[in-house]
Length: 111
Image 1 (cartoon, rainbow, N blue to C red):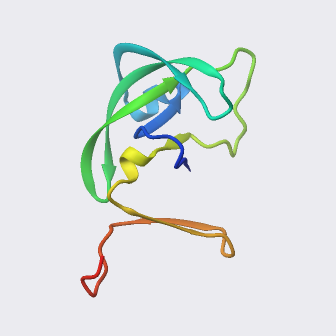
Image 2: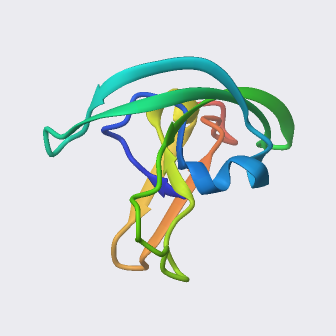
């Protein structure tokens, strides 16, 4: 997954990932504008994930696979958006090339 702070949903995946994430398509389709101003129709699905050790129902936006395109072996499964990040803490350490998502709680009670 890629953390996308410009995506205000919970998860966005390619349709090839539907079986793996056990998504249930809702039948709702919406036109969505991406950061590059491209508009695409996305389907809304539901899934249940384990998030910080707890089962959580999530809304999943599904995009269709481009015809004739094969996914790369290291290609991310999808996007993780701000609706799933909130109220957690996101730390990006550029020097260490590390991204950490944690509960927004400090041991000293300041978080």
